[in-house]
Amino acid sequence: MPRTLRAALLLLALAAPARAEMLHMMEASPAPRSVMQGPAQEFFVRFDGPVDHHASRLMIQRGDMVLRTLRPRLGASPNTLHAVAGGLPPGDYVLRWVVAPRAGGVPSMGGLDFSIR
Image 1 (cartoon, rainbow, N blue to C red):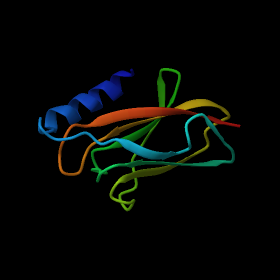
Image 2 (image 1 turned 135 degrees about the vertical axis):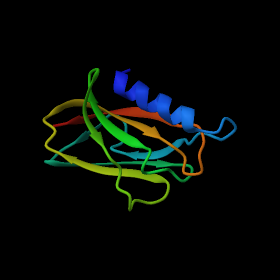
Image 3 (image 1 turned 90 degrees about the vertical axis):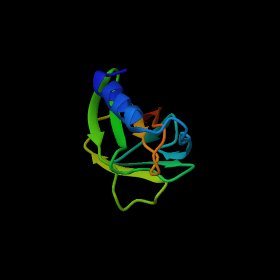
Image 4 (image 1 turned 30 degrees about the vertical axis):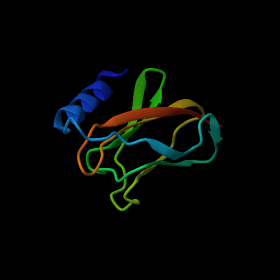
């Protein structure tokens, strides 16, 4: 796990109340192992509760390297991290997220593989 991702997760965990629940991913785009095409790539991850858009992040990884850290759009649905990235060259990637619950709680993280052709 990249050092910046570990540090972000640690900071979020330290700020969270110990008894709160973690968020769980319900839906994502791109779908796991899907192939995207075109110059603009749009990403979203929907969770089972409201997210803190300011404290959450989406990252695009290739191998062990984080290529981009995307700030979620603040106007997205309360339970959704949404961001747009463009200009990723063809290849295999991982969309990673660190999500903080809006009401405080335990941050969670996850990821999914996708490709661009």
